[in-house]
Length: 240
Image 1 (spheres, rainbow, N blue to C red):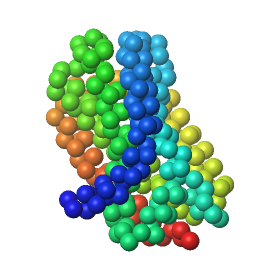
Image 2: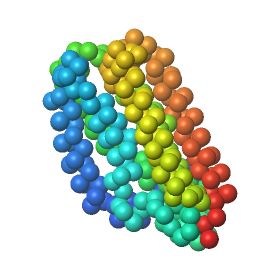
Image 3: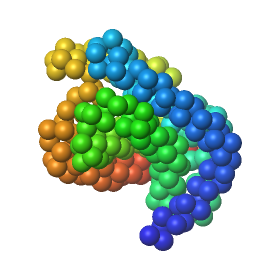
Image 4: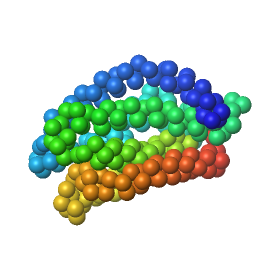
C-alpha cells in the first residue's frame, strides 16, 4: 500500500497539469454518451454498423490519445521510442516499480472516469437497454468492459516503457495491428450474427455469474501482467 501512495504522489504532478484537459475530456465524454444512447436503437436494429468501432475507439484508444502532448510516447534520440516522463523519472532516486505503478495510475485517471460515464449513460438514457438488462446483468456487463479496458487498454500504459525500434518496425507493427483489428471487426458479426457490444450484453444476461467471475479474474491477471511486461521492457531498453 505504501508503494501505491508513493506512486500516486509521483503521478500527482502530471495529473495536476492535465486537469484542464481532463475537464474538456469530461464534457466530450458526456456528449458522446448522449450520442451513443440516441443511436442505440439503430444499432440493435442493425442500422449503425460502426457503433462498435466508435465505442471501442472511445473506450480503448481515447485515454492515450487525450494525454497532454508532452507526456505522450514519441520518438526520442536515435531509435528510442518512449514517453519523456519515463526518461525523466529514471533520473530521480525512485525505484522502478514505483515509476511503473505511477504510469498505471495516470492511465487509470485518463480512462476509468470517462468509460464509466459511457457505461452509466446506457441505462440512464436508453429505455431499450433498461428493458434488455437486469440489474445483475448490467453489473456483469460493466465489469466485462472494465476488464477489457484493463486487458487491452492498459497495453497503452505498458507501452510507455518504449524500446529501441526502427521507424520501419513501428510503421509495420501499426499496419499489422490495423489489419488484425479490421479483420476481427468485420468477421465478428458474420460469425456471431451480432455486434460486439450486443454480444457482450447477451453474455452478461445468459451467463451473469460466470461473466462476473471471468471479468474479475481477467482484471487482476491483466493488471499484474502488464506491470510485469513494462518492468521487463524497462530493464532491457537503453534510455541513454
